[in-house]
Image 1 (cartoon, rainbow over the protein chains, first blue to last red):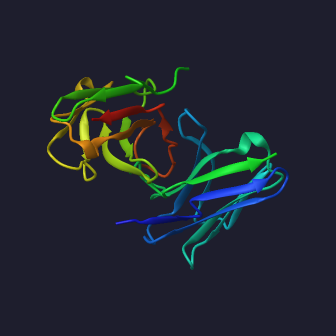
Image 2 (image 1 turned 90 degrees about the horizontal axis):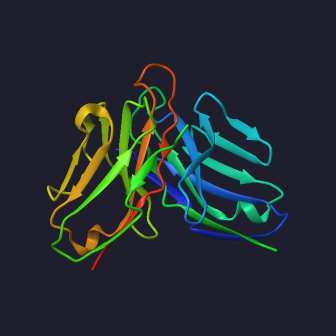
Length: 113
Length: 117
């Protein structure tokens, strides 16, 4: 089955700097990679996703990249702000099904003022 | 539109007791999922309902866990008897439709924090 590894487990960056979270997956059948953000005490929410026929996707200060050959995908946050502080989860699943999501172990991102 | 709701938000029970968690998905969502996060680890899949049928229950840890979705609306997850290692946050999620070529975002509930003492 699919296995998703996520690094780092914690990340602290100065406000205004960039943050990068990296994930790898094992199952080549996975072709959909969502990223969820969970703020303290709140529910996980989808912030961006990417499908395997695309190498990069950007939404304002957030971008995701995917290297299908290496089975790597990454989340990039630029010009970080205090409200970016949260736990971020990468995930993988088969795009064309309503199947389960396989999550990484999460990255706790802290933004230093 | 109301999101996924879960009840209770917190539950503290003693080892050996029974607890029932409830999830109300977004209205009209056929797919309902249960996940669990043990402290500091990944959000781990437990099972998936399509309407009232169990589509995938490969993540259920053992037979102390019983999930139901009678009528294809809300779902319950019962743990009986609870053990210390069952502590964690139990999330429910729902998504529209089933399969096809369009993806369906899974919307998460706020979770139930279960503590077994």
